[in-house]
Amino acid sequence: MEYEELENLEGVSREIYNHLLEDVRINTFLKMSNIMAVGRLGYNDHGRVHAKIVANNAIKMLKILNKRGIEPNFVKDCNGTFEDSIIITLLGAYLHDIGNSIHRDIHHLHSSYLAKDIVIDILKKYYPENKAYQMLTEVLHAIYSHSEGIMCLTIEAGVVAVADGTDMTKGRSRVPIKKGCYDIHSISSASIEKVIIKEGENKPIKIEILLTNEAGIFQIQEILGEKIKWSGLKDYIEVYAKVIKEESIFREIVL
Image 1 (spheres, helix red, strand yellow):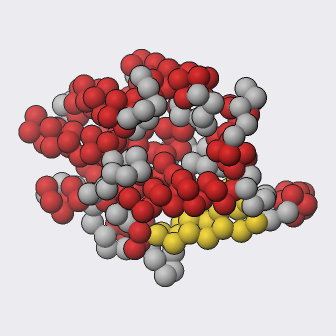
Image 2: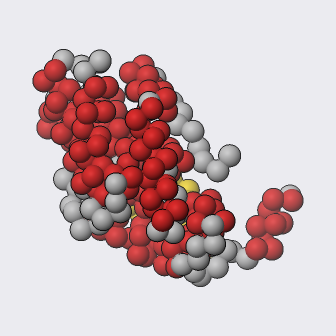
């Protein structure tokens, strides 16, 4: 398995995640996103696997920040619960790229209007109408502001943006490379062996990246670095990268 399944979701958040996995509209949009982004443009994966990875990493970071006393904005500004913020993060992360099914250009905007009806249909099953619409705006903010150049104004949106940048291991470039699409994005991703997100010492979140060669530096600086810059979470995240030799990886696996 090339990605971690979401764990430790309970109650409503688990039910919503199961819905995301089974919804025909969502699965169709994600499939078409890969047809557009990978098949037609030669980009890295923007489909279902990417959606799962981003959701998992975003929730992982949200929990670390909350543990370190950094409240999500829906809790602080709207008297929501932490589970509400998990659900906002989950929906924003899972649906952030469905707009690629229409076009890569301004896909964050396409994703926002495609997600609107999906999100409100889900939220109205579990929340009073007024709260459902409050949460909808927060989800759409997370989706809209995941692109570079748009400042994230909530913790929930920030972790979605950064999580999007953390999906950069060699597994993500498997589709374009298989199709013969070689560019700096796919080659750089292919150089990244592993991304580890954990609680840090100097800052709340520590992102460790293992590279097989220096080509992966492009992905870290130009993709992840830009995501962090616009996430509003720069003061909470430290990033470390290490270049390791193929032989070292082989020995570690054998032992």
